[in-house]
Length: 242
View 1 (cartoon, rainbow, N blue to C red):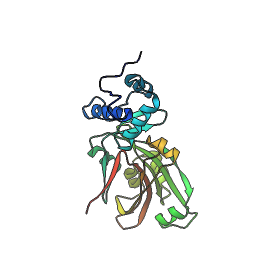
View 2 (cartoon, helix red, strand yellow):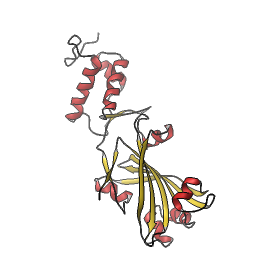
View 3 (tube, helix red, strand yellow):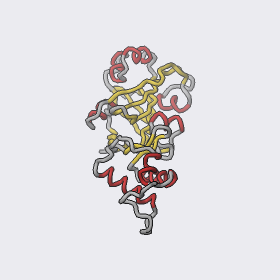
View 4 (cartoon, rainbow, N blue to C red):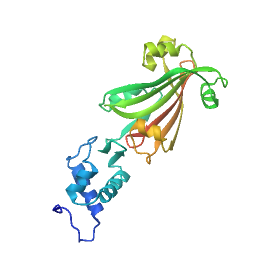
């Protein structure tokens, strides 16, 4: 026979799902469940609180809405990590940004290839539509957690071979003769992720991503890169400083 846990009260006017949410919230606050850690499954929580899964799901949805947990389809519910400040600066570099937060940067190349420039990338790079450009799509990770999904477009054809030899964009630029580069413009918007973007970023589909369109130039002011980066709002926030 199921026994109602001592922290659950069925007749005090407070709905059971809210009591469950408040109990889990206290346990997140006291460190029972640590940032990035997985919560018990819906079945385990149902058994613990002697309620049906619908009640547990309502509690978890509320915690997700408040930003305390993230629900990943097929993987479970996890305590939200600390939000990383992404400071938009003239020389923002992914590895430096992640290490600044005492986390280990890594990345996964999703595609690296030549492609014809479409209207958006042609405008960003200052080339004609249909011109041959280089695409690098990469998933950026901090301690193994996705924090960015970026498409980098380059007008220099040598970047394809350079990036095969050297995955660092900064070092690949040096190979093709670009000693340094910096941010010229940044345009930031927000939207909901597509299903594939949410899966890659391991984030809920009902939480927005920040979309940053960046144009980078060399020391002479010539455009060398146009990039579109997606950042999951459960883990990243943009900071603009003078």
